[in-house]
Length: 164
Length: 230
Image (cartoon, rainbow over all chains, first blue to last red; front, side):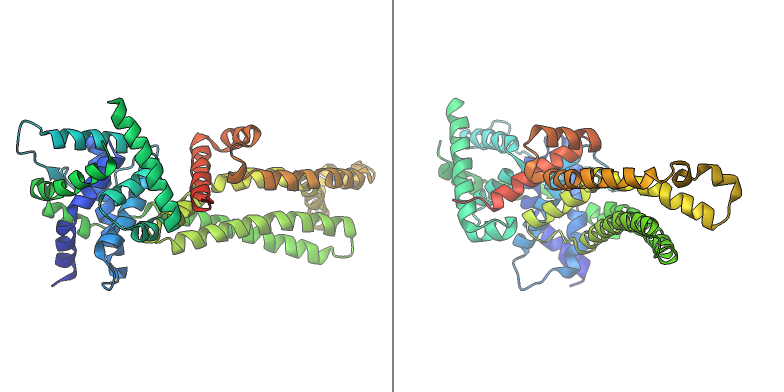
C-alpha cells in the first residue's frame, strides 16, 4: 500500500483520538477545524519517522497532544492551511433527544475543557483506557506522578459533578 | 458520579463516535500535497542571522584585541565586549540546536519545555542587557581607539579617553567591580524557577510581555509536575 494511502487509513482508524483532543482543547468550531488540520499536517510531516514496531495510537497521541497544547497556548491563531476546506472531521448526531449517558458525557466534556492543558492530556489518556505506563511514556512524567495526577483530577471532577 | 463509571460510558461511547464521525478524506489528500513553511523555519532564519551578526562582532573584536594586546585598558575593554557577544552567540546556537532537534513525537514535557525555551528567548537578551551594563562603558573606549587607529581626524573630538584625562578607566573599574556581582545575581534570579516572585514576574512582563510570562509560568508548572516528590 502506498505511503499516503496507509496514512489515510491510519487516520481513518484513529479519527476519534483527533476528534476528542480537538473537542477538549478548543471550544470554538473554527479553532477545532484549524487544530484538526494542524494535527494531521504534523502527523503527515512526521510519518516518515514512525517506527511500525510501536503502537500507532501512542505515537499519534504524543504528536496530537503536543500540537494541541502548543496551539492552545498561542494567543493569535495563524491559519496555515488556507486551501483545506472546513469540516475535516464532522460529528453527525443521529438522534434528536440526548440520553442520560450522553448528557453526563457532555457534562464531563465541559469539565475537561476547564482543566489545565497537561491535566486535559492526562485525563483524556486515562479515559481512553491507557495504562499508567503508557500515559507516563506519552507525557514524560513518572508512573507515580501520573497516578497522583489522575487521583487529583478525579477529585476535581467528582467535586464538579456533585455541584451539578 | 464516579469517574470510573464515566470512563466506562466514555469507552462505550467510542463505538457510537466511530459511527457518527465522518472523515473528509479529500482534505487529507490536500494536507498531504501541501508544502507549508514551518513556523519554526522563520525562527530558524532569525537565529541564523543573529549568529552571523554576533560572529562578525566577535571577529572584529578579536582583531582589535590582537592589535591592542599590550595596552591593558583597551584589551580589557574588548575582552568584556567579547564576553557579551560570545554569550549571545552561544544562546543563539542553543536555540538553533533546539529547533533542529525538535520532534513532536517526543514526550509532552520535553517538547513543551523546548517550545517555551524558544518562545522566551527574548528574556535572555533582557537579562544579558542588565548583566552587561558595566561593559557598556567599554564601547566608547573601543570605538575611540578604533577612530584613532584608523586616523579619522574629523572624529577626534569624540575621543572620550583623552578628554576625561584618564578618569574614564577609574570610572569603568568602579562600575565594573560594583555592578558585576549585582548583574550576576540578577541573571541567576530572573528565571522561570522564580516566576512566582513579584519583582521577577514584573521584570519579565515589562521587558518581554505577558505571553512570555505565561509561557515561563507554564514551564515552571511542567518542571514542578515532573519533579514532584510524592
